[in-house]
Image (cartoon, rainbow, N blue to C red; front, side, top):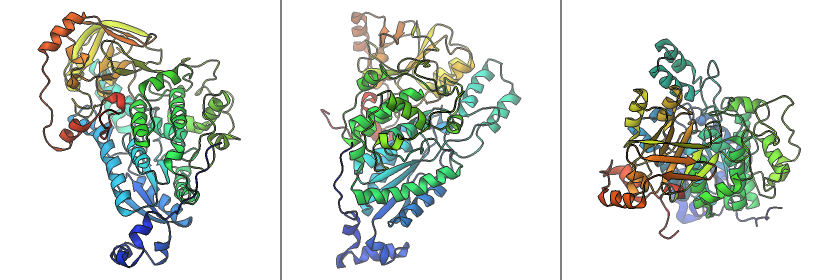
Length: 565
């Protein structure tokens, strides 16, 4: 059973702000925003809303924030809603704006930590929808270590003809090879995104929502609800009341986010066939929680956990279809029964994971979205951590087995995402090529852009199993094919990827977990002596600050890592 936390003063932080004669000015300010005498005697609960009208992932979160606030108020707390930013990966993908995507994770974490710390909130509900505001919320929760619940904004419904955002990216590649007409491309554009919610496959948003629930920081089923649903509204209201209950019980995030809880999150991500971004984000959240987690933990756990869910991008089904048969809870129950989850981990329900899963029914007979252990999609993890002379500090591949387990080809080197995409669309990338996209890492990009545009174009041109792609950048959860990202050290840090030349032979061996550049050590030494770093993309502003402070992707690309950690 989980450790029983010792109840503390549920108003420990807000008392400092609102009690006593010297805090009369504080109370005067708060009265103007709706506080009453009675409210000053209640625990203060901040509700962090990532609402904005710039992306479907977050366009409804203002409604959800109000529900969470009402839940906290009904349970005896005093809620205050505040905002933070979001950016849209789907909109900025393939443009210079995508450099700000991973940067926004840090801005969101910093801003939530800043507001909660400055205003003296005792507890927190954080509501996220798009890819970076979810880990950003969780990083702030871990740093603050005040009673908190994360709420997922929910998944989008499928577009017409079972389409989604990845369908649009792949249609662009199909259009380039003449397989998709102008009219069909326009039809997909107009119908694939029908309304509010995060991208509909097991892409980064749904992956991280599932991981956070498995981590114990969301209420049961929060990860498996549609954005526009009564269940999601109820989830938000219950989250508000749950924070007040956690305050009364003295349960804090770091009581929940233990090393064993992170192992549970990794296990569920693998079983679902989730995004490579989960590696980056879980490393970052663990860092903020003071939990030691490394790339090798993903390998260790991945050896014994199979891929069971047949979900997009490499599978057939979407999150809404998984929700219709019960969501991720029956899968978690199967994993628990198989001894693959730590059932004694505490959750925000105040119970252990095993207690939360007690009584969860299995999936209905005849469904084929989630496979049995006897017939997995892949017997071990699709998230493959590779080392070798091309990635001495590690790289992360997403190998489902459909692409094969080994690829050897000749390098086609590109210094940016844009140049690679144009070459793919122009038909210059051929069967047998290993596309190398460098200078896209956390420092060098800066911002570690996602390569959904190139991978989508590769799939659209019918080259998904005929070429490989490696990068010191990263991938969207919607990317699939023989792809390897997070190559470290990155090119901007003089990593070996900076030394690759056109025509060099490269082997990616997922079985041996090795990525090899077939160039002699002596030749690499000569190339290194001649290498010069590329001129920085930005010399001032947020991108420059980020580039100066960000760590390697192998450490989660965090910006507050101390020397020697």
